[in-house]
Image 1 (spheres, rainbow, N blue to C red):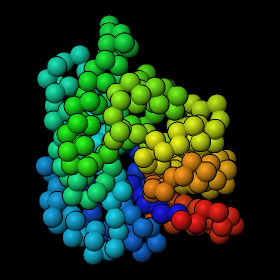
Image 2 (image 1 turned 30 degrees about the vertical axis):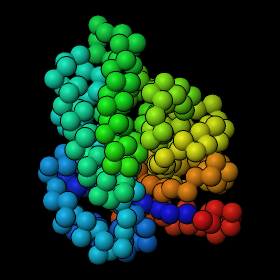
Image 3 (image 1 turned 120 degrees about the horizontal axis):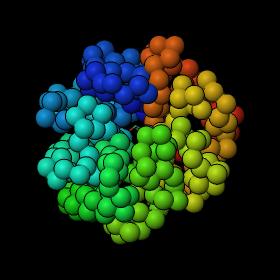
Image 4 (image 1 turned 90 degrees about the horizontal axis):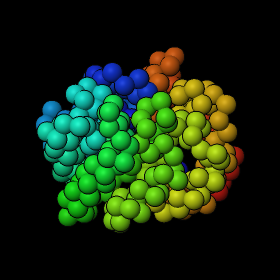
Length: 276
Ligand code: LER
Ligand code: MN
């Protein structure tokens, strides 16, 4: 079981990220806690020096399994489904820049909040058409660089577009490309899926990335989710990627990261089936 945790390269408003800013310090803390990887949340790849970033990460023997793009929505309002064509174009351009960075790290591109929400006065059908168009453009550029995109079903309080696995799988079928899959997040799944484990198994090899947080979006072990059947279902689905902690810095970032990894590693020891 390979574990990573989300680290935002810059301060950001999004709450469920334990580590933000102060990159060098956090990278060394994350490595010290025993994580194998660090998922980077980056608002704009032009804000980072990718060579320095790569060296810092490699010097701690960490890998970058995924790059999160949601801050472009959270901080700047960019989205694939805006009613303003220049904003839709900017969201696509931003994603193309992320794809170039992802190629350097062999990382997956995460499409979460960047898909946006249906603007008032517009229809969901219109938004879905924009979303499909944007994903086709981005996936085509990503395929040239052998990068994969993972669309994340998000709960209904965050968007009206793709709330669950079933909608995610239909969209993937509609876009019809091999390098588009899903990112499943236990926090969202706990709200939206009829059965978290059945939904994981239904995705099979379309699970490209996996986020863990407990029911309260604190670290695994701090809420009422039972991670044993969840990890078992991932194993049954043949998932060999990273399990990435995306949770609140509660009671503080270090404690959350430490208790989260301890909980998951304990479960792994209890059930040898989770071994790679
Ligand atoms: C991001 O991975 C996520 O889970 C969302 O709630 C916000 O993008
Ligand atoms: Mn997530």
